[in-house]
Image (tube, rainbow, N blue to C red):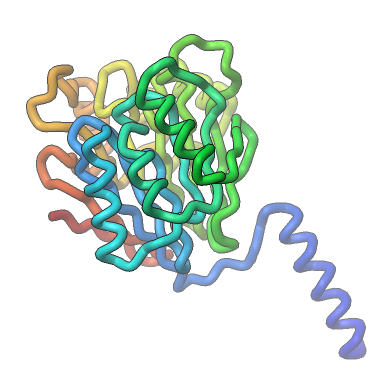
Length: 279
């Protein structure tokens, strides 16, 4: 085989790998997840190879805190910002972040909400001319070649339940898998199980702050996460986390980390190690 033939064949193989969504993975690729302590709400930052994706930004008062955290680490650009759903405990802090951080694309499910928080978010996106994209089940989000980000939910927007219309993300890097559930409930979990999706994951961002309306037994058994993250406020008015999710996660052998107990949580992962640090 001549060198020219070798290069042509190699190029074809690489093109096929790209088109199938399978790309060569560097074992040294490191992912960093930061689950911010935003009180009663959700906010998570993924960092990989200098790229950043913010998923939710907590309630209104969390916005300046997240911005300060980013500035202290010289992060001035967010490649992707995802609002899982338009409840204020997930998007309230987002306008403050978007005003300070240049943003590549803003993503949500297309669900709307008649609240000041949601209206302020839309005004900020328009004012700063941030590219906007709607995603649903089956879509993917481009961030970095070393990771694949699949959208598992919402299937559609027929439901009037904003929680069940949450964007659910499955992030894959080599043999590592991470599942971010937004506030999706048991009905969403059951659909994912019935569709035959391999839900096994190293890390689970527990749905709906540890509510009993999420994290059903069958789902937790299917995911069987090594690490489970619950974002919530201490002594919150809802009684989260509730007993059933904690019991199912414990039975699955998961290590449970709660922002109300340990503050901001950082998870660092590569193909060999999965480590957790807290405040």
